[in-house]
Picture 1: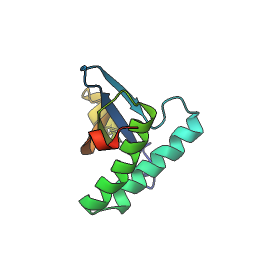
Picture 2 (picture 1 turned 180 degrees about the vertical axis):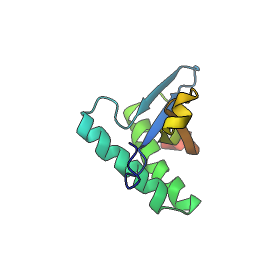
Picture 3 (picture 1 turned 30 degrees about the vertical axis):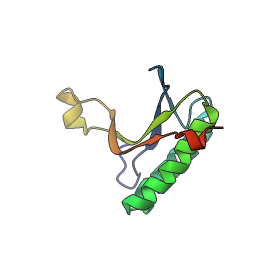
Picture 4 (picture 1 turned 120 degrees about the vertical axis):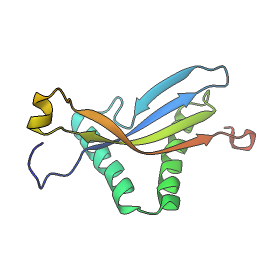
Length: 117
């Protein structure tokens, strides 16, 4: 984690909501093996880093949101959040800082009546 040539770790987090107000949260890695999780994290990083234009990022995240809405037909809204794992320096760690996920980009998608399965 402290090697300068090692890039950051990314993840996509989804918060799904139903019309009744129930909420659930998952990541692309939910239910997958560790290796699949790393590969999906790399994919998320590529979406964030390579697609520097907001319209391209939103299109990529829209595809991920559509996938999650397809897997959860009871949900009518999904919030997609691209996050980066922030590792503090050793000096920051000694002062109490701990690793955490930092939000880099967030988009919300709503299922319309036309898009119901």
